[in-house]
Image (tube, rainbow, N blue to C red):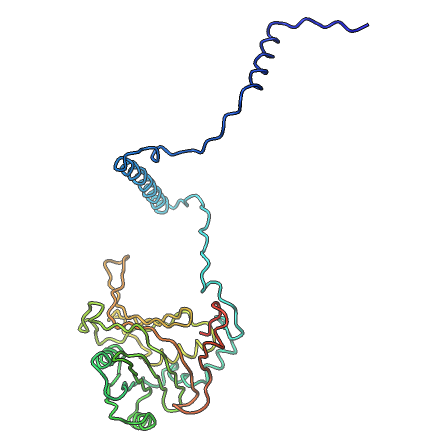
Length: 331
C-alpha cells in the first residue's frame, strides 16, 4: 500500500517553475571588459578622452606626494608602501670573484700600506705630471692634451720629439716628475693612454674611446678654474680595480680646494672607466646641480706592468680567453 502524496501549495509550484526556467535558459557568455575610451570611434575625441584620464591620474599622484611632504613636515610617517623591486642588470648579477675585496679588509690595507702609491696617500709628496704624446700629433690630440693639463694640477705638456719612452722616463725622473702620461692617437683621434708612475712603476695602458673636448659638449675651457679638484673613484671592487683606481687618483693633488667646486669622477662599470669633469652649482642651501665642464672619455684597461715600462705583466686583457661570461668582470 503506497504512501499518499501530499498536495503542493501555490508558493511551491511557483518556485518550481522558476527553477525549471533557469535550467532551460542558455548561459550568457562572459564578454571581455571594454573601456569606454576604446569604444569611441572618432580618433580626436578618443585622444582627448585618453588625455583627460591621464591628466586625472597625474593630478592624483601630485596630490599624494603633497600629502606625503606635509606629513613628513608634521613628523607623521606616511603609510608604508611596498618596496620597489630592483631590476636585474648585468652589473647586479655580477659573478663573485676570489679577488673581490670587502670594505674593511685588513690584509688589503697592509698591502696598500707598502705599495708604490703609499707615499702619495700619506701625503709625502705633491704629484707632478708630465703629459706627452706620439710623434706628429694632430689637432684633436693636441687639444686633448691641453685640456688634460688644465684639469690635472701641476701637469706640464711636452713635445715627444721622437724620443723613446725609456728616455722620457729618465728625463722626467731627473726633473722631479712623479708620473708620465702618454697620449696615443689613431686616425687623428686619441685612442690610447699610458700612465707610468715614477720612479719604479707600475705602468698601465688604457684604450681611450669616445673622447669629447670642451668645445664638442658646448663648454669653454675658460670655465675650468685653477682650483684643485675633488677626485671620486667609484665602483672598483677587486684588487686589480683598487690598484688601477689608486694609480689614477695619484695623478691629482691629495688636498682638493672645495672653494673651486670642481669634481673629477672615475666611474667603473663593467670594466669600462667613465671619466667626467663637473662643477657644483648651488641654487640655494638645499638644491645643487652638476655642470659638466669637459673633457669626457672612456678608458678600458689593456695591461698592467710592474715596473716603469719594464718588468713582468701583472695583468693582460685577453678577450677571447678571459671574457667567457658576460657577468664576469675584473675591475
